[in-house]
Image (cartoon, rainbow, N blue to C red):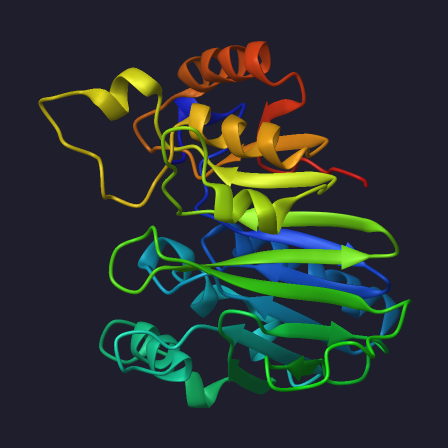
Length: 287
C-alpha cells in the first residue's frame, strides 16, 4: 500500500533479498522485486559479470508474484534464474508464472524472456544446497543422502506450513557458516505458539514472521479473520520466544495499517520480546 501514510515502513508487497557466500537469494516476487531487479542490472552493467539469481517462492498468491513480470534480470540474456517453489492445486509453478504474464493481461509472455530459467518444485523436507555461485543449486529430497552437505555451503531447508488457505505455504530456513535466518510469512499461529514451526526455527539468528494483525483486530467479532492464514504480532513473538531466536522481524503488513499503527504495534511487540522490530523497506540486517 504505497503512499503518504507508509513512507517510513514502505508499501511494496513481499520480497526479501538474502546475500550469503557470494550467492543472491530472493524470497518471493512481490512488487519489492522491481527495484531490486533494477539494482541487480545496474551492478551487472558496472562489473560486466553475469547474474546468477535463486528465487524461493513461498506460495503463488498474487501479492507474492505480481512483481515478477517487471523483474529486469529475467529479460537479460546474461542472467540465469533458478526458481524453486511449490506445486499447488494441480498447477505447476511455471504455469502459474506464465499465466500471470499471459496476454492480454501483460504484453510479454514468460517464453519471451531472454534469461536462462530453471524452475523446480520443492516440498516438505527438501534441502537446497548452494556452493559455487556459478553452479546450479543442488536439490536434495527426503530420499537423498542429506548428510554430505559441504560445511561452507549455503543451505535452504524447507518446511510446509498448512496454515494458509488452498495448499499451505513454504517456510525457508537459510543457513551459512553458523548463521541462520528463517522466513515464515503467510502462516497463522496457535494459542500458546506454533510448536511445529518453533522446532523448525529453533536457535535462528533472525526470524521473519507474518504479523498482519493486531490482537484486537484478529479477535474482532464483526470480521472473522481466523483461518485467513495470517498471524498477530503476539503469535510471532510466541514462536520467537519458544524457539529461542535472537531477533524477530514482524512482516507482511496489513495494507490498512499506516506507519503510526505499525510503530505502535512494534512497541507492543518489543515489550514482550525485546528483539522484535517492524520490517521496513530497504532495511538491512547483518547476521
